[in-house]
Image 1 (cartoon, rainbow, N blue to C red):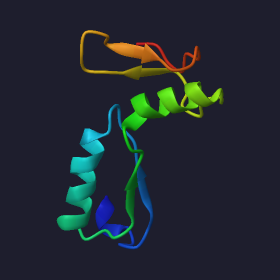
Image 2 (tube, one colour; image 1 turned 60 degrees about the vertical axis):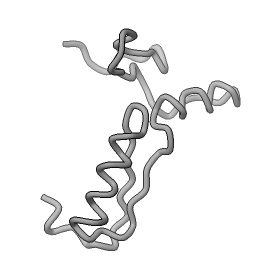
Image 3 (tube, rainbow, N blue to C red; image 1 turned 120 degrees about the vertical axis):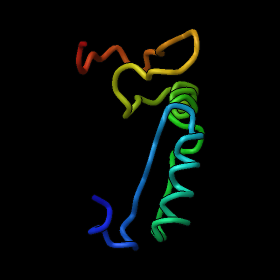
Length: 83
């Protein structure tokens, strides 16, 4: 649980598009008192566009699941697990 985590410990979050991390980050800071909370701005969607535009390899492997009619977007061809 987070009750044993140092309030100064760095916490880095990422999510699909970024909005859940904004909300969760606010909760961690305002309600739980953490002071070193960061997030990947724009989420994996923005990150994938960025590295593709720069011609860089992605550190995120596999498929990014999204909550619209696309259902998922391949970031890399890696398959990490199957359901």
